[in-house]
Image (cartoon, rainbow, N blue to C red):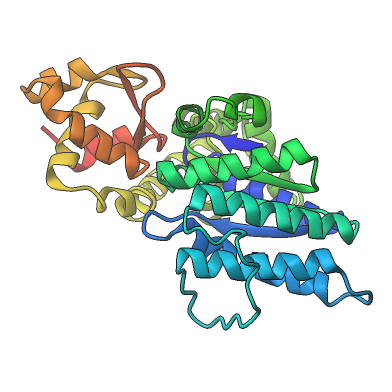
Length: 345
Protein backbone atom coordinates (compact mmCIF):
# COMPACT_ATOMS: atom_id res chain seq x y z
CA UNK A 1 0.00 0.00 0.00
CA UNK A 2 1.23 3.50 -0.87
CA UNK A 3 -0.52 6.49 0.71
CA UNK A 4 -0.78 9.31 -1.82
CA UNK A 5 -1.47 12.99 -1.21
CA UNK A 6 -0.27 16.57 -1.15
CA UNK A 7 1.88 18.09 1.58
CA UNK A 8 0.17 18.71 4.88
CA UNK A 9 -2.62 16.13 4.59
CA UNK A 10 -1.25 13.75 7.24
CA UNK A 11 0.47 11.00 5.21
CA UNK A 12 3.46 10.87 7.56
CA UNK A 13 1.22 10.81 10.63
CA UNK A 14 -0.77 7.91 9.16
CA UNK A 15 2.40 6.05 8.18
CA UNK A 16 3.73 6.40 11.72
CA UNK A 17 0.44 5.05 13.10
CA UNK A 18 0.61 2.09 10.69
CA UNK A 19 4.20 1.41 11.78
CA UNK A 20 3.15 1.51 15.45
CA UNK A 21 0.13 -0.72 14.77
CA UNK A 22 2.36 -3.24 12.98
CA UNK A 23 4.59 -3.41 16.06
CA UNK A 24 1.55 -3.83 18.31
CA UNK A 25 0.38 -6.74 16.12
CA UNK A 26 3.73 -8.50 16.51
CA UNK A 27 5.29 -7.49 13.19
CA UNK A 28 8.97 -6.65 12.99
CA UNK A 29 8.51 -3.14 11.61
CA UNK A 30 10.88 -0.73 9.87
CA UNK A 31 10.27 3.01 9.37
CA UNK A 32 12.57 5.06 7.14
CA UNK A 33 12.32 8.30 5.17
CA UNK A 34 13.70 8.53 1.64
CA UNK A 35 16.03 11.44 0.83
CA UNK A 36 17.16 13.01 -2.41
CA UNK A 37 20.80 12.57 -1.39
CA UNK A 38 20.72 9.17 0.34
CA UNK A 39 20.78 5.75 -1.26
CA UNK A 40 17.81 3.49 -0.37
CA UNK A 41 20.20 0.70 0.63
CA UNK A 42 21.82 2.97 3.23
CA UNK A 43 18.40 3.64 4.75
CA UNK A 44 17.27 0.00 4.85
CA UNK A 45 20.40 -1.83 5.98
CA UNK A 46 20.52 -0.68 9.65
CA UNK A 47 16.87 -1.54 10.54
CA UNK A 48 16.89 -4.79 8.51
CA UNK A 49 20.10 -5.79 10.28
CA UNK A 50 18.42 -5.07 13.61
CA UNK A 51 15.41 -7.20 12.65
CA UNK A 52 17.56 -10.17 11.67
CA UNK A 53 19.57 -9.94 14.87
CA UNK A 54 16.34 -9.83 16.92
CA UNK A 55 15.12 -12.96 15.11
CA UNK A 56 18.49 -14.63 15.72
CA UNK A 57 18.33 -13.82 19.43
CA UNK A 58 15.32 -16.06 19.98
CA UNK A 59 15.76 -19.34 21.84
CA UNK A 60 15.99 -21.92 19.05
CA UNK A 61 18.61 -21.77 16.31
CA UNK A 62 17.16 -20.99 12.86
CA UNK A 63 19.08 -21.81 9.70
CA UNK A 64 16.79 -19.42 7.76
CA UNK A 65 17.68 -16.51 10.04
CA UNK A 66 21.40 -17.37 9.84
CA UNK A 67 21.09 -17.40 6.07
CA UNK A 68 19.28 -14.05 6.15
CA UNK A 69 22.24 -12.52 8.00
CA UNK A 70 24.67 -13.97 5.47
CA UNK A 71 22.62 -12.62 2.54
CA UNK A 72 22.58 -9.20 4.20
CA UNK A 73 26.37 -9.39 4.43
CA UNK A 74 26.49 -10.29 0.73
CA UNK A 75 24.19 -7.38 -0.08
CA UNK A 76 26.40 -4.91 1.77
CA UNK A 77 29.58 -6.18 0.16
CA UNK A 78 28.07 -6.44 -3.33
CA UNK A 79 26.84 -2.85 -3.36
CA UNK A 80 29.91 -1.62 -1.47
CA UNK A 81 27.65 0.28 0.93
CA UNK A 82 29.29 1.83 3.97
CA UNK A 83 27.10 2.59 6.98
CA UNK A 84 28.77 4.74 9.60
CA UNK A 85 28.86 3.21 13.06
CA UNK A 86 27.99 -0.33 11.87
CA UNK A 87 30.41 -3.23 11.89
CA UNK A 88 29.17 -6.37 10.11
CA UNK A 89 31.62 -9.23 10.33
CA UNK A 90 29.29 -12.11 9.35
CA UNK A 91 30.51 -14.16 6.38
CA UNK A 92 28.48 -13.55 3.20
CA UNK A 93 26.34 -16.09 1.34
CA UNK A 94 28.35 -16.65 -1.87
CA UNK A 95 26.47 -15.95 -5.09
CA UNK A 96 23.33 -14.57 -3.42
CA UNK A 97 22.57 -10.85 -3.28
CA UNK A 98 26.15 -9.94 -4.09
CA UNK A 99 26.07 -9.00 -7.79
CA UNK A 100 26.20 -5.26 -7.13
CA UNK A 101 22.97 -4.80 -9.12
CA UNK A 102 20.37 -3.29 -6.78
CA UNK A 103 17.41 -4.59 -8.82
CA UNK A 104 18.68 -8.17 -8.53
CA UNK A 105 20.13 -8.04 -5.02
CA UNK A 106 17.34 -6.29 -3.12
CA UNK A 107 14.91 -9.02 -4.15
CA UNK A 108 17.32 -11.71 -2.90
CA UNK A 109 17.65 -9.87 0.42
CA UNK A 110 13.89 -9.43 0.87
CA UNK A 111 13.27 -13.12 0.10
CA UNK A 112 15.89 -14.16 2.65
CA UNK A 113 14.34 -11.88 5.29
CA UNK A 114 10.83 -13.08 4.41
CA UNK A 115 11.93 -16.71 4.78
CA UNK A 116 13.57 -15.92 8.11
CA UNK A 117 10.39 -14.23 9.35
CA UNK A 118 8.25 -17.17 8.19
CA UNK A 119 10.54 -19.58 10.01
CA UNK A 120 10.05 -17.55 13.21
CA UNK A 121 6.28 -17.36 12.57
CA UNK A 122 6.30 -13.58 12.41
CA UNK A 123 6.07 -10.91 9.69
CA UNK A 124 8.00 -7.85 8.56
CA UNK A 125 6.51 -4.45 7.67
CA UNK A 126 8.76 -1.99 5.83
CA UNK A 127 7.39 1.57 5.98
CA UNK A 128 9.01 4.14 3.66
CA UNK A 129 8.04 7.82 3.68
CA UNK A 130 8.68 10.32 0.83
CA UNK A 131 8.87 7.57 -1.79
CA UNK A 132 8.92 10.11 -4.63
CA UNK A 133 12.55 10.92 -3.77
CA UNK A 134 13.75 7.48 -4.89
CA UNK A 135 15.37 7.50 -8.31
CA UNK A 136 14.01 5.29 -11.08
CA UNK A 137 16.41 2.41 -10.41
CA UNK A 138 15.78 2.42 -6.65
CA UNK A 139 12.00 2.48 -7.09
CA UNK A 140 12.19 -0.28 -9.68
CA UNK A 141 14.31 -2.41 -7.33
CA UNK A 142 11.87 -1.92 -4.46
CA UNK A 143 8.86 -2.84 -6.62
CA UNK A 144 10.62 -5.90 -8.05
CA UNK A 145 11.60 -7.05 -4.56
CA UNK A 146 8.01 -6.78 -3.28
CA UNK A 147 6.80 -8.58 -6.42
CA UNK A 148 9.09 -11.50 -5.62
CA UNK A 149 7.85 -11.58 -2.05
CA UNK A 150 4.25 -11.53 -3.28
CA UNK A 151 4.84 -14.39 -5.70
CA UNK A 152 6.31 -16.53 -2.91
CA UNK A 153 3.64 -15.53 -0.41
CA UNK A 154 6.24 -14.59 2.20
CA UNK A 155 5.32 -12.50 5.29
CA UNK A 156 6.93 -9.21 4.29
CA UNK A 157 5.02 -6.13 3.16
CA UNK A 158 5.74 -2.56 2.08
CA UNK A 159 3.69 0.45 3.22
CA UNK A 160 4.81 3.68 1.62
CA UNK A 161 3.78 7.32 1.41
CA UNK A 162 4.47 9.86 -1.29
CA UNK A 163 3.33 12.85 -3.30
CA UNK A 164 0.83 12.33 -6.15
CA UNK A 165 3.54 11.78 -8.76
CA UNK A 166 4.44 8.46 -7.09
CA UNK A 167 1.50 6.76 -8.83
CA UNK A 168 2.88 7.61 -12.27
CA UNK A 169 6.45 6.87 -11.22
CA UNK A 170 5.61 3.36 -10.04
CA UNK A 171 3.56 2.66 -13.18
CA UNK A 172 6.38 3.76 -15.47
CA UNK A 173 8.91 1.81 -13.43
CA UNK A 174 7.05 -1.49 -13.57
CA UNK A 175 3.71 -2.05 -15.34
CA UNK A 176 2.58 -4.61 -12.75
CA UNK A 177 2.93 -2.05 -9.92
CA UNK A 178 -0.72 -1.00 -10.39
CA UNK A 179 -1.79 -4.58 -9.60
CA UNK A 180 0.75 -5.02 -6.82
CA UNK A 181 -0.12 -1.93 -4.74
CA UNK A 182 -3.17 -0.11 -3.48
CA UNK A 183 -2.88 3.69 -3.71
CA UNK A 184 -5.35 5.13 -1.17
CA UNK A 185 -5.67 8.92 -1.67
CA UNK A 186 -5.17 11.07 1.44
CA UNK A 187 -6.72 14.50 1.03
CA UNK A 188 -8.23 17.43 2.83
CA UNK A 189 -10.98 16.94 5.39
CA UNK A 190 -14.65 17.54 4.71
CA UNK A 191 -16.51 20.29 6.57
CA UNK A 192 -17.79 18.02 9.33
CA UNK A 193 -14.41 16.45 10.07
CA UNK A 194 -12.65 19.82 9.88
CA UNK A 195 -15.06 21.26 12.44
CA UNK A 196 -14.58 18.22 14.67
CA UNK A 197 -10.79 18.55 14.45
CA UNK A 198 -11.13 22.10 15.79
CA UNK A 199 -13.95 21.67 18.31
CA UNK A 200 -13.03 18.35 19.96
CA UNK A 201 -9.70 19.47 21.51
CA UNK A 202 -11.06 22.75 22.90
CA UNK A 203 -14.28 21.21 24.25
CA UNK A 204 -12.19 18.99 26.50
CA UNK A 205 -11.13 22.29 28.13
CA UNK A 206 -14.70 23.66 28.22
CA UNK A 207 -14.12 26.05 25.29
CA UNK A 208 -16.09 26.44 22.05
CA UNK A 209 -15.61 27.97 18.61
CA UNK A 210 -18.57 29.95 17.28
CA UNK A 211 -20.02 28.74 13.98
CA UNK A 212 -18.76 31.93 12.28
CA UNK A 213 -15.26 31.25 13.60
CA UNK A 214 -15.32 27.70 12.29
CA UNK A 215 -16.49 28.82 8.84
CA UNK A 216 -13.73 31.44 8.64
CA UNK A 217 -11.06 28.86 9.47
CA UNK A 218 -12.47 26.50 6.84
CA UNK A 219 -12.38 29.30 4.27
CA UNK A 220 -8.75 30.09 5.07
CA UNK A 221 -7.46 26.51 5.38
CA UNK A 222 -9.67 24.75 2.78
CA UNK A 223 -9.77 21.79 5.20
CA UNK A 224 -6.10 20.81 4.97
CA UNK A 225 -5.13 19.19 8.30
CA UNK A 226 -1.77 20.94 8.75
CA UNK A 227 -3.37 24.35 8.31
CA UNK A 228 -6.33 23.50 10.53
CA UNK A 229 -3.81 22.70 13.24
CA UNK A 230 -1.95 25.98 12.67
CA UNK A 231 -5.11 28.11 12.76
CA UNK A 232 -6.42 26.27 15.81
CA UNK A 233 -3.12 26.82 17.61
CA UNK A 234 -3.07 30.54 16.88
CA UNK A 235 -6.75 30.98 17.77
CA UNK A 236 -6.25 29.22 21.11
CA UNK A 237 -3.34 31.52 21.99
CA UNK A 238 -5.17 34.70 20.95
CA UNK A 239 -8.62 34.12 22.48
CA UNK A 240 -8.97 35.24 26.10
CA UNK A 241 -12.42 33.77 26.72
CA UNK A 242 -14.86 31.20 25.40
CA UNK A 243 -16.29 31.14 22.81
CA UNK A 244 -13.53 31.72 20.27
CA UNK A 245 -15.03 34.29 17.91
CA UNK A 246 -14.75 35.47 14.32
CA UNK A 247 -12.67 38.45 15.48
CA UNK A 248 -10.28 36.05 17.20
CA UNK A 249 -9.92 34.07 13.97
CA UNK A 250 -9.20 37.17 11.90
CA UNK A 251 -6.34 37.98 14.28
CA UNK A 252 -5.26 34.33 14.28
CA UNK A 253 -5.16 34.32 10.47
CA UNK A 254 -2.55 37.07 10.42
CA UNK A 255 -0.38 35.18 12.90
CA UNK A 256 -0.88 31.83 11.14
CA UNK A 257 0.00 33.21 7.69
CA UNK A 258 3.08 34.98 9.08
CA UNK A 259 4.31 31.78 10.76
CA UNK A 260 3.64 29.64 7.70
CA UNK A 261 5.43 32.15 5.45
CA UNK A 262 8.48 32.07 7.71
CA UNK A 263 8.64 28.29 8.14
CA UNK A 264 6.40 25.87 6.21
CA UNK A 265 6.49 27.79 2.93
CA UNK A 266 9.88 29.50 3.25
CA UNK A 267 11.87 26.31 3.81
CA UNK A 268 10.53 24.97 0.50
CA UNK A 269 10.88 28.26 -1.36
CA UNK A 270 14.54 28.57 -0.38
CA UNK A 271 15.35 25.25 -2.09
CA UNK A 272 14.48 26.72 -5.48
CA UNK A 273 16.88 28.35 -7.92
CA UNK A 274 16.02 31.83 -9.29
CA UNK A 275 14.71 30.31 -12.56
CA UNK A 276 12.64 27.79 -10.64
CA UNK A 277 11.17 30.58 -8.51
CA UNK A 278 10.18 32.44 -11.68
CA UNK A 279 8.46 29.30 -12.99
CA UNK A 280 6.61 28.80 -9.71
CA UNK A 281 5.54 32.46 -9.64
CA UNK A 282 4.18 32.15 -13.18
CA UNK A 283 2.22 29.06 -12.13
CA UNK A 284 0.81 30.92 -9.11
CA UNK A 285 -0.17 33.87 -11.29
CA UNK A 286 -2.49 31.67 -13.34
CA UNK A 287 -4.70 30.96 -10.31
CA UNK A 288 -5.68 27.91 -8.29
CA UNK A 289 -5.91 24.39 -9.66
CA UNK A 290 -4.21 22.62 -12.55
CA UNK A 291 -2.55 24.76 -15.21
CA UNK A 292 -1.40 23.88 -18.72
CA UNK A 293 2.35 23.87 -19.28
CA UNK A 294 1.90 25.98 -22.41
CA UNK A 295 0.13 28.71 -20.43
CA UNK A 296 2.96 28.81 -17.89
CA UNK A 297 5.48 29.15 -20.72
CA UNK A 298 3.41 31.88 -22.35
CA UNK A 299 3.32 33.81 -19.08
CA UNK A 300 7.12 33.57 -18.95
CA UNK A 301 7.42 34.58 -22.61
CA UNK A 302 9.25 31.40 -23.67
CA UNK A 303 8.57 28.17 -25.55
CA UNK A 304 7.33 25.20 -23.49
CA UNK A 305 10.32 23.06 -24.55
CA UNK A 306 12.80 25.57 -23.13
CA UNK A 307 11.43 25.33 -19.59
CA UNK A 308 10.79 21.57 -19.57
CA UNK A 309 14.09 20.91 -17.69
CA UNK A 310 13.13 23.50 -15.05
CA UNK A 311 9.72 21.86 -14.62
CA UNK A 312 11.34 18.44 -14.26
CA UNK A 313 13.77 19.76 -11.66
CA UNK A 314 10.95 21.26 -9.56
CA UNK A 315 8.98 18.01 -9.79
CA UNK A 316 12.02 16.10 -8.49
CA UNK A 317 12.21 18.51 -5.57
CA UNK A 318 8.63 17.62 -4.74
CA UNK A 319 7.20 21.12 -5.23
CA UNK A 320 4.90 20.48 -8.21
CA UNK A 321 3.43 17.44 -9.98
CA UNK A 322 1.59 16.59 -13.16
CA UNK A 323 -2.01 15.57 -12.36
CA UNK A 324 -2.62 14.91 -16.07
CA UNK A 325 -0.56 15.05 -19.25
CA UNK A 326 0.56 18.63 -19.87
CA UNK A 327 -0.91 19.88 -16.58
CA UNK A 328 0.99 21.25 -13.59
CA UNK A 329 -0.12 21.86 -9.99
CA UNK A 330 1.45 22.60 -6.62
CA UNK A 331 2.12 19.73 -4.21
CA UNK A 332 1.96 22.21 -1.31
CA UNK A 333 -1.55 23.58 -0.64
CA UNK A 334 -1.83 27.39 -0.49
CA UNK A 335 1.71 27.74 -1.85
CA UNK A 336 0.49 29.84 -4.75
CA UNK A 337 -0.87 32.47 -2.36
CA UNK A 338 2.49 32.53 -0.58
CA UNK A 339 4.28 33.16 -3.88
CA UNK A 340 1.94 36.00 -4.74
CA UNK A 341 2.69 37.59 -1.37
CA UNK A 342 6.44 36.99 -1.61
CA UNK A 343 6.94 37.86 -5.28
CA UNK A 344 4.49 40.63 -6.22
CA UNK A 345 4.37 41.73 -9.85
